Image (cartoon, rainbow, N blue to C red; front, side, top):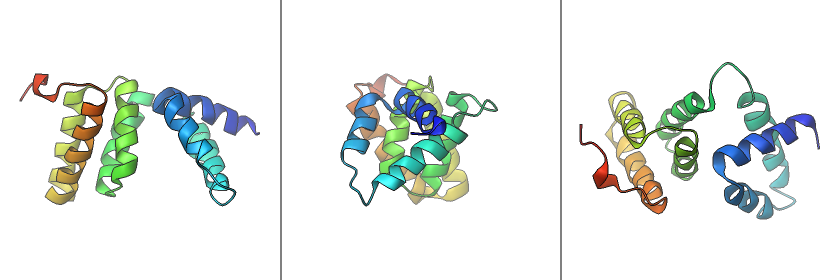
Length: 132
């Protein structure tokens, strides 16, 4: 594999967890493996591997963009990744409120549902979060 793939695989595992990445790669078929390779090389190696932004900042940006695009399955994984990158639950909430202001209530409502489900799955008590 290329250097970009190896770099991307390392970053992808750090952010999304080994379990998530192993599942994605193990479930790939001959049809979908080229996509997995491109995502790992380009998104994770070439883009996430750049020095211009921290992983934490990239996570915050991704939460907003993925929510606006209404890609809820991807959002769930990136909520986990954001927590792994040091983003707080309160910060996730603020990003999703920003989505409501600029992309509309339906996108924000779906994104809050997705984020809530993932955070609960991660064992985070959403009632213990500041209600501000």
